[in-house]
Image (cartoon, rainbow over all chains, first blue to last red; front, side, top):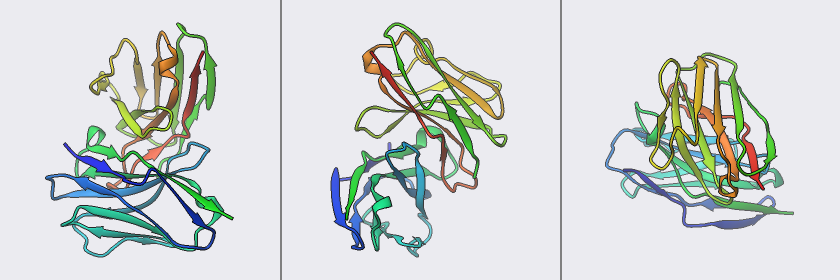
Length: 116
Length: 114
């Protein structure tokens, strides 16, 4: 079974600074997808970024980028130029390719606070 | 990606009663999923609902407690039955990813049982 670990329950960063959230996972699969979701106080789960395991190039979406280390099973999220609106819970998630439902596993989350 | 309307957004219920949560999707989807998020916790999958068949429940969740309906390809309901304070959580519905891009979630229902 897959597991996802986020070792930082809480983090804070000053506005405009850069912060990195850690995520590690354990799987015997070779074909999978990794995601970062953001959950602000509104409760809405918002997809931030995704990475296909077969791609070596790290995914980037505007101020959000990942450092994907497949051999180390590490998938960290870097937020550049942090904004107050980035304050939220961030969940790392794993999905086995080709199957849904119970193969989509969330980490415990990291609560990020962006300070003015 | 699909747009999901979930309601109610929040409710406060008496113990022993039941609450039905609805999710409406703006397009047809084969699979819908229901998650529970207990206070300060991550998301846990309750069940997978396919149209035209019985929902598939994860370990620790049973149909008598969380009956699910899936009458068509755009709608599903989750009922939380005979509620106790331990059922106080956020409940979210989700739909299958499009091309493995990622799940789309409803806005969640914050349930408080008193």
